Length: 125
Image (spheres, rainbow, N blue to C red):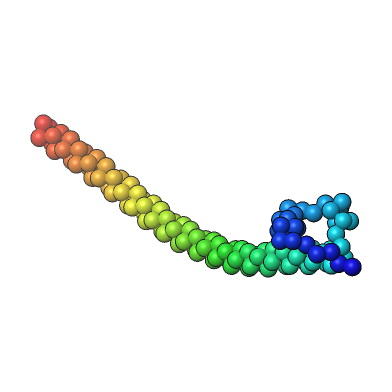
């Protein structure tokens, strides 16, 4: 025969299933109460699994987004690297030109001073 319960006992049972039912409490339950408790637990577990599945899907989506951002960042870094290499080569070319011009100026200056000395020597001779 199944025991009849009042509302307070049913509420206590519901709250006790929310807080873990221990082994001793399980042994005191009737078969119908035990089945109801197990079904509640299974439903609760099912909800948790569904929630976790949704969270896993969201994490997968975020992971893909992060992967895409990572690829974009890699591309940006490559572009910056190429730009810097181009700028460095232009700077090196400019430095080479400056060096050549300095050498020309130095040669020209040396030639001018030699001419001045020669002119001076000719005038004094």
